[in-house]
Each structure stands twice: as C-alpha cells, then as structure tokens.
Amino acid sequence: MPELPEVETIRRSLIPKLVGRVIEDVELIRPEILINESGKGLTGWKISGLRRRGKYLLIDASGSNTETGKSKAASDNSGADGVTVVIHLRMTGQLLLDETGEMVRDHVHIRFKMIDPDDGSIIYLLFRDVRRFGRIWFFPGGQEELQSGLAALGPEPLSDNWSIDQLSAGLARHPKSNIKNVLLNQHVVAGLGNIYVDEALFRSGISPIRSAASLNQAETTKLYDSIRTILEAAIGHRGTSFRDYVDGLNTKGHFQYELKVYSRGGLDCPVCGQTILKRRVAGRGTCSCPQCQPDPG
Ligand SMILES: [Zn+2]
Image (cartoon, rainbow, N blue to C red):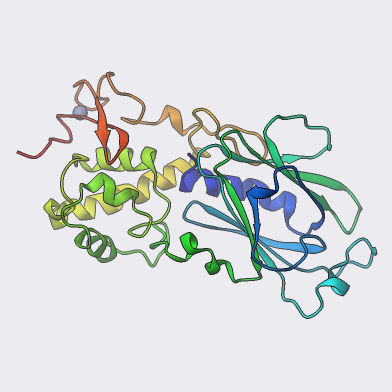
C-alpha cells in the first residue's frame, strides 16, 4: 500500500504536468470509484495545485479563466470557488499520466482528460486499481474535511508543528496497545503504514510488541527522530516499490534497497547478524530483530 513517501512522490511527479491544465472530460469506466460530494460538474476546472495529507492526495482546481471556449466553468459553475478532488489509493491504486492518449493498461477505472489552455495539448490522468479499494471524492473547493477519514487524521510527521510531546500524547491515549498498532493508527500520526512503522521501530531499537506505555522519554524521542529520518530518506529515494507502486510517470522508487527489516524475515540483521523475525503483530506481517529490538520480559 502506498504510504506517505509514495503519495508524496506521486504528488511531486504530477505537479509540473497537471498544474494549469483544465479538466476537459472525465471518463467513468467504473463510476462507483468516484464519489461526488460537490453537486457540481466535474469538468471545466483549472488545476491550481496538488497537496498531500497523510496517505491522501488532494488536487485543487478553481474556475478556469481560459478564453478558448473549451472550458465551461465560467458559465456552469458561476459563483463557485472551485473543487477539491481527494484521492486515496488504498492497496493497489495508481495514478498514471498518459501523455499520448495511447496508453493501454487493464484495470483503469477513471480517465481524466486534461487540456493545456495555452497550447491546446491534451494529456490523460488514469486511475488504475487492480483490487479496486481506492476511492476518489470530489468536494467544493477547500471542503475536503467533509471526507471523514481525512478530517480525523492526526498530525503530519514531517511538519514543523509535529512535536515529541504530540507523539507522547498520542501514545498515552493508547497505553495498552502495542507500539506497532499505535503507529499504524492514523489518528496518532498520519501517513505511516506497515513498511515505515517496521523500519522506524528497528531504527529506534523498540520491539513492535511493546506496549505504548512502556516507552520512556528517551525511547519516545528516538522513535520521533527515526520516523522523520526514515520518511525523509524514503522520499529522497522516491518511495518503496514492491508489487504495484510507481509514481505518476510510471517510475519505480528504490527505497526497497534501503530497507533494514521490512520484507527481510529470515535474513540476517544488517546491524548484529541475528536472524530477522517475521510474525503477526497488530494483524500485519511484522519484521523485527530479536537482538536489536528485544521483546519485553
Ligand atoms: Zn539486530
């Protein structure tokens, strides 16, 4: 599943291609993927920016000022202040840019046709999803918090506003839960999934089965630093590509070559040489080093 670094990489790959274009048409091959909460038409809006929140990608669009006549925003949506498209890729969702209109891929469920109002060039943004858990919502501009999952998200771990105290407070709300489970909880901190939780816990020397309440201040600080370091490094490597993940330009990331424990069950720990343990924690396949991350008692 794409986590924070993958969604951030997709965002960065799409910004130069999409901003300034007008949504000219939307082909709904599987209409149930798109949930229109805006009551507005989908077409005619000019893309003004792409944002990320947790694992959600947000596309902001506003009234087009094109004079080509190809946009109908000005008449259809007069008085409106734009739309925000919210995308969650879930397990296997992908956003792929098709710059020729000739890309042939199976499992494409929605196809956005985007026109450059200056030169008339057309590109397509494809939403592809083998398992079809991904969703796209469509809200009046800036009203994305109508999406309940998005509204309930905890702090952004790479923002300047996220503090060690906030992490401590998040842990304190779930004292008996194991730390793996608490870090996967999007209310405590947004954007982490199985890969980066395992890697952050390894870097911190904390067993995934320890209770949240058992971490002392030094361990909480180490965990906070590790989460930020791992996420920054993963963005620097353009995300982790196992099965499905590619960015908007169909390019794989390469953080999979940097992983220390995730997906390495049965292999040697790169720090101490012990065999990495794989087991089920918080309902997820979880990898840790029994020596670097000793289990309690
Ligand atoms: Zn080790």
